Length: 227
Image 1 (cartoon, rainbow, N blue to C red):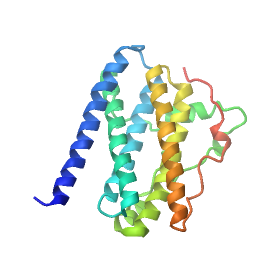
Image 2 (cartoon, helix red, strand yellow):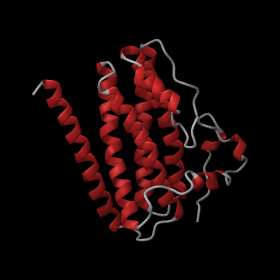
Image 3 (cartoon, rainbow, N blue to C red):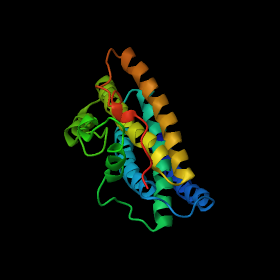
Image 4 (cartoon, rainbow, N blue to C red):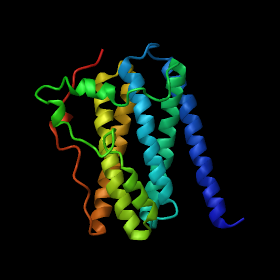
């Protein structure tokens, strides 16, 4: 067995452990909280799982395409977001809710309509239904890239992806009913904001810049809770 195979196996085991522990610990913590989730609690978990799954896909591509600095960042994203997927899927199963939303992002559209002074047309539009998601063509370009070209495109797409996640995670801190879900959103904001800052530094070192930001909008104003 080669060193590369051993390393790949170790990464796979770390991802499985993150997902499994996240699934169990998330369900355990929620049992100590309010037993009844609100609509935003359920819908956020459904949508954020789908959102995270694309980040996991992009991070997986980086494992054999990126340079060492971006490889390490991608591995961290891969493990952390796999764990969060496990937490949110565990909650959905505990609640007896579908793992996939019938109307993705409907919960956030409702709360955004309640933002003072912001109309739906003012909300930044991503190239896919969820904010920050990469398009199929962008994923194809990422799959084909290698080395520094991969690094730059990966960080541009992941920065925008994280910004979309920040929009969702900041919104759920107000619209969710359960404290555990609000705390999860708060943790995502902290983690992904740090990674955005790191990617900005790495992009600058590569002589590149992020894509236009999704966060320069009134849509980041405080929203009213969704009942």
